[in-house]
Image (cartoon, rainbow, N blue to C red; front, side, top):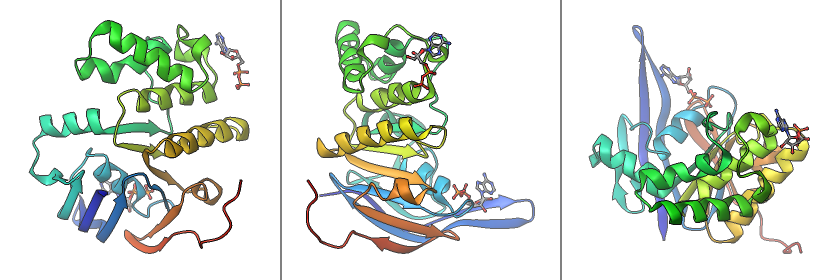
Length: 233
Ligand code: ADP
Ligand code: ADP
């Protein structure tokens, strides 16, 4: 089952009198349950691709289907709904609300989805438990280390049971220990059947995925699945 399908997607930004071709004729399919990384140097178009996949921006040309639905045909309200219900986001800067406790931050997507208070509290607690922060539910972001904040963000991404987890440089601000924690969580989410798209400029991080898509100058120039080999235990 194809979850995510881009067909001949291009994105052009107007920049003064110039046009910047941030993406050119990008076609890509990701199946349910795949773990895909997108790598490329700065300026290659990764963020543009992430914004389109995450329904935060729309392509200038081409088609994008998420879960079989044509994203181009949606209005802003429908796009917000898709973002909230189908996609769990993890960002480099964590993007937690500083005035809210970990529990409230994780609950937020469920508030927008209209889930009952007692149900969302319980789900948020469960999600924080899954990322190893059961004893930090009442801490605010500034009372947590960077690694802990990113684990809260991962809990927030998974609490609504999204189709797709979209992680944009999720380890970019973390030390090696916290990087390993967050990558292990993504591995777990993948093992439990979720589809993961990980955007990174770090080859070591990209290697965690089953499949690595290389982007350069707005084009995909390599889409590699690992060679079949012995399954490591
Ligand atoms: P990456 O995430 O790989 O660093 P981006 O997708 O941010 O790459 O950028 C791709 C190209 O598009 C770059 O040349 C960048 O300068 C340009 N670009 C990105 N966003 C905008 C924008 N809002 N307006 C004009 N140009 C942009
Ligand atoms: P790490 O070694 O993971 O980077 P830190 O040294 O930043 O963690 O924090 C160690 C512990 O102290 C963490 O469990 C965190 O919850 C707690 N902590 C960190 N900063 C604060 C703070 N400003 N107020 C309260 N507790 C904090």
